[in-house]
Length: 231
Image (cartoon, rainbow, N blue to C red; front, side, top):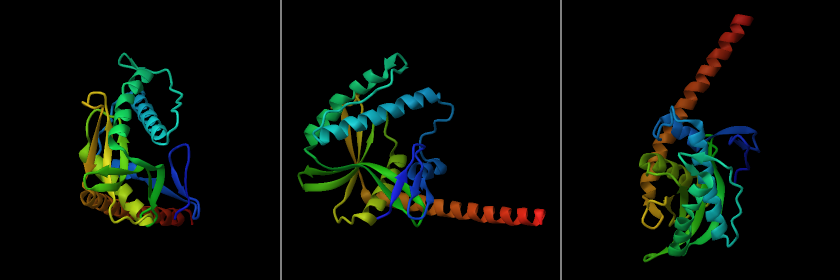
């Protein structure tokens, strides 16, 4: 099991080797398969980010049987305050907890692939009952407006691949818990095909390794060139 550290800038480090690791989000961003936020006001992005973190915190507290206590900044976006936007999503969170009957296992679990130098933090691990029995799920929580299938499936693929390396499970499944007040129940539990997600991440990982190798080679050539010019 790797000894990971995540700093305030959301940068991962392997404490055993001192190596900085690249996040799953950064790899996906390099591949340009996620929604582009180019030109979007940073205030809008910060608003969405804070809302997402609050939704996750409320969910984890409910699953652990705790009282959710969140310090929400007094922000407003398009006439809606951040606190209002969060409160609108609470019924959906509560409804999923009630409907799913899931058993909480862990949240905010850091996982990594030291061979590729990539790490990430999966949102939730839970045992979710169904007609076919109870299954363990790696779940990522989203509070956005629309599904982003390619981005989300690749992200899930990264998390499940790294999780399975650490905790082998013959019946692991993966899903997105999509919280939005516009949905009929306030949520949609979107189960993704684990094999397809893993394949997508495998392609992304291979592309990342090629990219990293090219940068390492360029860095070496630049270092050699600098040594010659100053020698």
